[in-house]
Image: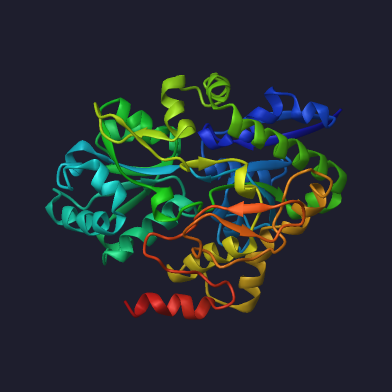
Length: 400
């Protein structure tokens, strides 16, 4: 058995890694997998960069930021496998939510109106709202910025964004230190169940099937261990398929204290796609709230890495350049995914880039094996991201 250590945070979207170990998929591939529970994304980043672990459950934008030298400890990282898409939500205190549309279903179903509603609520709040984000370089933070900017909100001027580990968000909200937070599940559902907050936006209604967590490696280690990487990706692909088909058993496994450590009833909303938006309300269906396997979820589209890059440029985190653009795209290693899963009896995309946000209905696409249908991936504002025209895309925001 080959020993391998992977760092993770106690979140529902660590499921594929946990299932790979608990259901024997890594063992079948000859891998003795150790999962290292970590509290914050900064600590997880350091564990990976300083070679305390071989891989990590990682925020997709953080992998790109570290590679671009934007994070505290620069290193070249690689992400050949997506662990999930979507799965995050914005929960605001019941006090703040009282200034929004009183119908939580309307808020969720009309994110355009909800963004403007949020802008108006800022002016009514007793202070500049403090919103918790799990990391400066997270999909959550980028989606929050993207959504609120539509309504003319400058997240750096009109809000105070405070970085907190996901597992500490609910206690910070309870103590009045923040007015809300955007994080991966189960933490928004925990805040609602505890009567602290209402869910006012969900990631899947901002960017359907938007990139979320990836499996991150140090690029040099990945390149030096191709056979082990391939075996791991095969195990993870099998685990992801199991996760999509066995959500109730998965919740029981995740509930263990060494993993997420929350009751099954707090984990099932995200896994079942039935979220309670407000304390005491009935659950609302979100069939694609969190995906692990179907529709080639795990495939690392380079165009999604470039969308992240475009947002980092938009918010002044990185100076645009051909070198930075190429380095960002190269973090998502679709070539390694194809190599590892070449013999797997599952369809995979024939291309490595696509127009992001262009699909409004399920669409059949070219595939190397079998047939592949991709689900809707549109952005709430109907923009389409062309990875070959990033400058034009960014210029369109200033024309609004």
